[in-house]
View: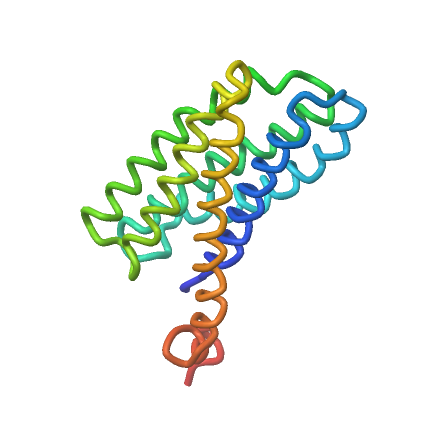
Length: 192
């Protein structure tokens, strides 16, 4: 059975990137009582990203390497966002957790190179740019705590990546239900 929930995951990537950029811009130095309600938002979007990402990573429903480039970062950053939500809810310091965005960011930049090298999507340049922008933004996150000038740079990179992902997500929502893609797909019991 073919299951395609990439559109949902793409919405979660856009939302998570926007949320991280907004939080870094507005709440990084805010008091615990001000930021605590945002923990639920991080937790929710982290779960929306991690759960289908884990399924994608374990079952490989997509063609070849697409399972790697889409599933594994979704699990990594989905779990990271969810745990960030718990850390915020508990009122703890996010700085130690922020260091986990560094290796994840390096992986995203590496995936951007792989997308270009192996032409893994229909629009390799667009998707490689999105992955690289979010990846470099993620690399900068732990350093932005100590070097405030990096905050807007990381935020802008996350916004650029989110904008490209949003554009791709809109295209996917228009294309995927069409008769050329999944519009004619039927579950096995309904096939004649």
